Length: 520
Ligand code: HEM
Image (cartoon, rainbow, N blue to C red; front, side, top):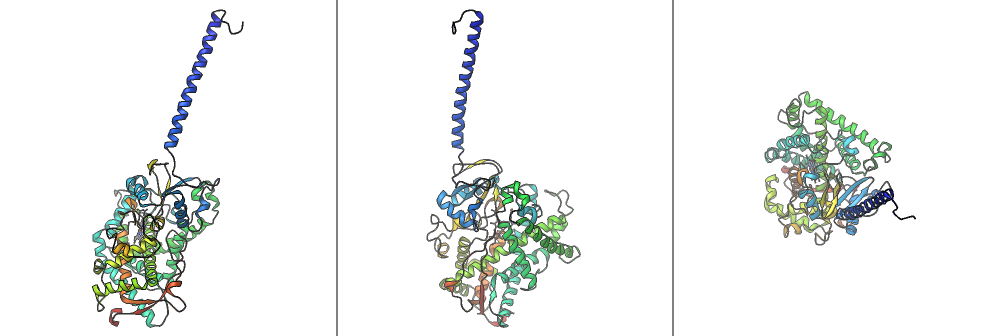
């Protein structure tokens, strides 16, 4: 009968069947345990919260025209650590000082790299520059050269006279503009000429622009275009399989702009090689490193040098000048604060001599105005992107390897959980309270220069330039708006880009307030 063991073969068959059952049961149990463990792991490895996305594009369409605004709004909904799928890439957004600190301090080394992108490829000489260089010996070498020769305390002090001279020339040119009755000054442009010439003198022993004129205007327009293009969330960066289609036409524009920059810096390099420079300037130092075969990170080619000049001129000009433009805008909107700033300057400096850089340490209200400007108008609202070298855990969430990191410093500056009345421009919050808060990457409430090993290379120069240009403009002139504009109706909109420009340039009328000989 079926099912009965009637002989040795049947017995063997039945044992074999039992073994199969046993095996299957064991496998089943192992499978269930495995499933439970992997479920637990999955739960343990949970990603930060975030909005659900569309196929292929993921959350890219959510970013809109002003990604830092959209991300700020989303963070109010999903929290200070938020996961987005941008195209096919993992992206995480930090929107609170605590989470930013976990990324940029606790996990600093792991986030010291930057993701590849079309801007780095087509505009920054295929990441042969410093800003987009992969984290490693070459980046270290470039940063060290810049630190020693441009940004370290001694180099900064050595170039103080250059900064003072260029700022003096800016004041003279504004006074001349006023004397000749040329009407309102485009402050952003004048400031940009000044910052570009400071860098030109330091790096090339040369003023790159003689005055606000067509060449200066063209260069600024090129820098602004670079900032706009670098700020575009280019679909090809997030869905690499679509990069070749250049759906937004961004890559084509980048290549064209790169050619203009390459011509500009190529000309400068050739002039320098033909003896138009000083042996001590930065470009001469770079040229001397050309044959430095044993230098850590390798030799420097012409391309590398042009890439570095591109970085320093683009990262170092408009960031500082637009910050001063925002600061003056805010002070025009708040005449009581403008008066307080002036009173402080007049008390410390008086009105019979020029303001010097050394005076800044005694201008604590002015320093508070600068911090407050960086809080509300940080020139790089999302910092520059970083990328996780390895998977890690932040804020209790799993961050997969290669995840891109954006830190929304613009949002952090407007967060009511961090600041009282966050939308009000109020330098007292740094003057009467929070006087300890520093901008150099240690106090994560205010990190306009980023933090960690990839913090802005030029932050010391940037801070000095912003404070000194602002103080000098306030000391030297009374500022008013052209007819038809009032402080209350001043346009405060931002333009799109990787840096935070005013949508409408600030046009202001200067009236000299010092003795005439101080403008000569
Ligand atoms: C108001 C002035 C400035 C602001 C707000 C600013 C802001 C920034 C920010 C946010 C970053 C990215 C930091 C990060 O990833 O954490 C950066 C990087 C950088 N900045 Fe600045 N910057 C300013 C002025 C300057 C100046 C004057 C220079 C040089 C002349 C400069 C050169 C650089 C360079 C080379 C990097 C790349 C550093 C690296 O990747 O290692 N910046 N800057």
